[in-house]
Image (cartoon, rainbow, N blue to C red; front, side, top):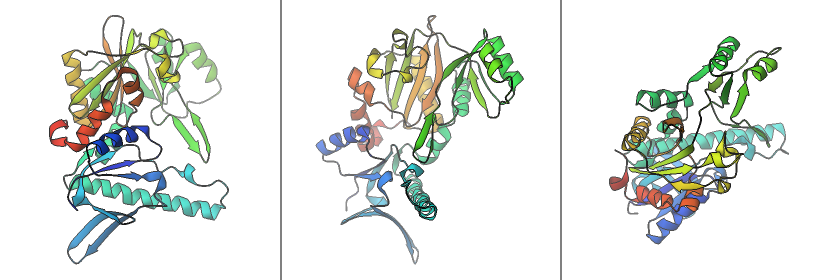
Amino acid sequence: MAKGFVLIVSSKPDPHVDKVVKYLRAWSIPFYKLETNNLIKSPDIRFSKINKTSHYSIFDKELEISLSDIRSVWFRKPYFGYDMINNELKVQQALSERYKIDEFRQVCNTLLIKAEENGIFVVSPYNALNKAKYKILQLDKAFNIGLSIPDTLVSTRYDEIEKFCSDHDGQMIIKVLGKPEVTYGKKSITFQTYLVSIDKFREYYKKREVDYPFLVQEKIEKSLELRITIIGNQIFPCAIYSQENKNAKLDWTKANPFDIPHKEYKLPKDIIKKCFNLCKHFKLQFGAIDMAVTPEGKYVFFEINPNGQYLWIEHLTKLPLSEAMSNLLVYPERYALK
């Protein structure tokens, strides 16, 4: 089989993948979707070593794809969550299903790591995604390359957090360090960004301990917010006028994005360069950067999502994000960030 497959690793449903697939089909580019929430049913991912030869491949019905058949990999949104396990199973059966999911994760991730080692273009490399998801590292690197960030503290000490709040007009933003959604079985809870006054903080922790690390930041006044989508060597800044929607003023993700005005935005050249440098540092070929512009015109970095959503921006602004991703996967020699 001639080399040329685009391997898309995600979980279904994913409209981002569907949109890119339309371009691949229109361009007659062969592709394969490896859906990680459907691995138990299909396909078969194999590794074999016979004599002095090792071989990695994907089998699905009559189709076999070897590493040598792949032109690029899009590590989009793989999911190996334990909530896929039926709650009605007995404990032993549920543990067995959990074991199977972990084994599939091992094989799937190994395939992706080997693809990168074999020189196959990956959006974005497995190890790069793992490193880039840590917000403390994001903030530290953004600051080091010259981007402005809010005053920030991560601590488990009550006195430090209280002083930080006191030093910033008696209020602070509390954010999540890791994933905002926590699941247990079929139940989940989402932790969001919220504004806390020093009085409320003191009252709540009067008889409690701070028993986990808090990420707290100063409150940034915003004239608008930015979602800057980087796809290879292309950059697509979008202004989000969050201050025009009362539900989006503090955190625009709490509101329906279709109720917030969006518009294509022109970034200063130095900010563009720093955004690309941030992605280069983390070895990302895709990054969704969140920033704010203050009333004084200052650009403030909040975070970068190495596998963020972008399709709603395409719908609202007509920015060609899916086409850009398709071009990156098909022609990495032309569109990759180097």
